[in-house]
Amino acid sequence: MTNSGGFSTNSPQSAWSTDVIIVGGCGHVGLPLGIVLADRGCRVVLYDLNKAAVDLVNDAVLPFDEPNAGPILRRVIDDGTLRASSDPLEISRAESVVVVIGTPVDEHLNPDLFAVPNAIDALAEHLVDGQLLVLRSTIYPGVTARVEMLIAALGRTVDVVFCPERIAEGKAMEELASLPQIISARNEQGFERAERLFGAIASETVRLAPEEAELAKLFTNTYRYIKFAIANQFFMIANDYGLDFDRIRTALTRNYPRANDLPGAGLAAGPCLFKDTMQLAAFNNNGFTLGHSAMLVNEGLPLYLVSKADDRFGLAGRTVGILGMAFKSESDDIRSSLSYKLKRILRFRAAEVLTTDPYVTTDPDLVSLEETLERCDLLFIGAPHAVYRHLAPTQPMVDVWNLFGNGVVV
Ligand SMILES: NC(=O)c1ccc[n+]([C@@H]2O[C@H](COP(=O)([O-])OP(=O)(O)OC[C@H]3O[C@@H](n4cnc5c(N)ncnc54)[C@H](O)[C@@H]3O)[C@@H](O)[C@H]2O)c1
Image (cartoon, rainbow, N blue to C red; front, side, top):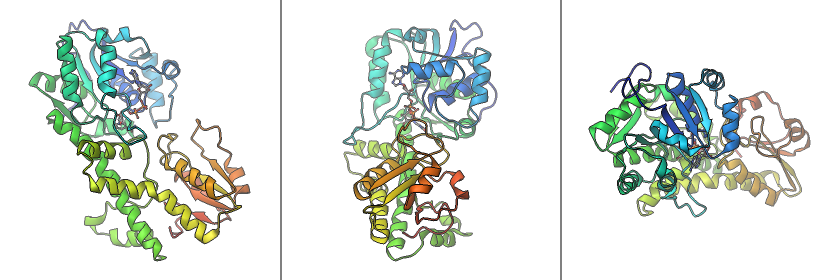
């Protein structure tokens, strides 16, 4: 279905004082969604347990960086279409309840199957008949059915739908409007209500059954994670023979459409790709050789780089710097960043490790770029922020991203 136009409530005389409440609304997915919905005329409340983030949002301040979101947040806060709250009583006033809390895997790579059902159970007394309950977190397959059972056991008449978020952090404001929205529901009423909600923002909607949609989201992230792993494995193969993978990649992708989606090498990290690949593996009774291999390659890259650098430059007694601690370029998000794994390994081998990042504000151990350049004997690029491109460091550089265009051989 192709969409156009702004938001309209279920009925002209809607009794709801809020159109949409977003549970987890001050997070990386909830906040851009709320801003965009409010910008289309929808009355939005962001419900979040993080009171510091709630206060920031109500002051029209983004708790994290999301390009182009700031001015629209200011506008929708000022005109009263968006506000944030930690009061669960807000939930019963909303026609649609969107749940987009975090769904991490634990330290043993097991998904928390109950993260979303438990959060909904905790709010159950505030759910009321006639609401639309939208699951938007990336969930373990079967969670939608579990939530449906939970709602049935409560005796509530609530339409449950699963509509996964597929934006990339840093591109939310453009991608919420440009990406097709996968909509899944158990019946026509659920489909139509979800299409009405997302029709306000998405370019088109695509229907699937809930179990198909749960897998569609996991396949989306896993596919990307495996593509990064292929690039990283190719890099290691070429590098072990003293050859420059990026030079080879540039040649093989040139005017050759069948390979032009081969990414460059780099630290494939962040809060989604790895954990969703592990969610899929867990769902498939851990029978996911390709996914586990991708994990070994991507998670093994920091140690590979350090070992190669140690062989070539000798790390003992040296001061080593990492430029960029966010999990990807132009981001302030350090969640599951492999730069920190790199740091841990380097600290074991080198005398001292200095870390720097122009965007990250949540790590008290960071030092300035100037100090890093002045004091370090060797530099690693952790996150390929564009601001580093203009540097001309005098010390050796481990640049797996080929940010400096000098090749990636270590
Ligand atoms: N970050 C991304 O780019 C991205 C993209 C697509 C999908 N996702 C998925 O979206 C979900 C959320 O990810 P995120 O990056 O926004 O996480 P996040 O940690 O940035 O945001 C989650 C928010 O939920 C709040 N919260 C947690 N439990 C709550 C509860 N019981 N009630 C109210 N608020 C609660 C937290 O305080 C936080 O603000 C995950 O399932 C993730 O896999 C993330």
